[in-house]
Image (cartoon, rainbow, N blue to C red; front, side, top):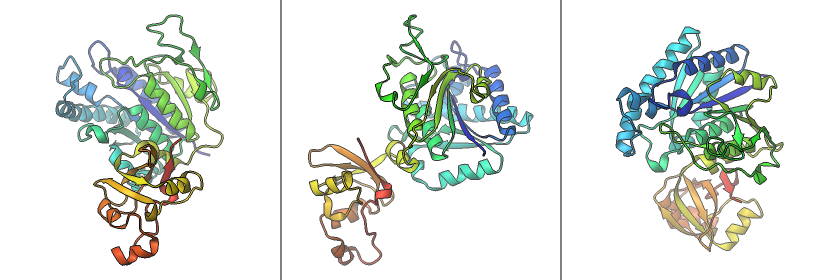
Length: 365
């Protein structure tokens, strides 16, 4: 059975830390490794950071810009150069690639999964990045570690490799604490009790850190994906790890993974508004696993349309869940607190039976 592999490489691995210039030897090794895996009948997706870092190098900027508009402009410069280099290297090995740029707003589009599957069926390696050129703060993933975990859960991948600038996970940052203890294996039961002083140390050209990789590993393992954190300077280790060698830190998947769609709703979609619920609705959703009906809606906040994601708030003001709504905010304001039989008289025929169907609803722990 064909296995699917998602590989994420960060800016710290793609570029030289002292200059921000591309580390071409590392990229070449990565391209060769992924092509070899594809020829061995693996389906491969690459999530690549680096657009802003490469843009900085191209424009001779010595620091990563902080202003959003400047950062978007620099990303536009860097993304074209980055994908051209990938295309040239993969083309030398006769391996077709495709570019996919995403924001959180794109994740509600059901066609995303179909697009990935079609590309993989065609023998293409998709190269994914956050669309930094257009993403505003509220639509950003924040880091490509999270993006890669969401992609892995979406395509039901078997492996997620997080390539970084350290060999593996340690009990503390080994660059600061020499006595830090390496961690080779984390099973699903141990994850919640994992004691690691990750700090938030990042390079001058990247945006992530070990804390984002642990968050990504949690998302992926919950989706049934085996996740590995390992050094990005030796991409060929991916093949060795798949073959069974103990390199890096391996996070075992949950034996009973969460529903991939619900992981996307919980972690991938940005909420465009809030729906306030009465106590009866909260109990029906959280304890009985029911869908949300208009009768349980007390108030509506925000301006959203049908198929947008919304947060669910209880009577104490606490967020208790998230879901994809079947009504716009204006429609929901008209029918809040109403019984289903009355909704047709208010909005007309062909109205959805539920405000949020239970299949599109996630209750947060």
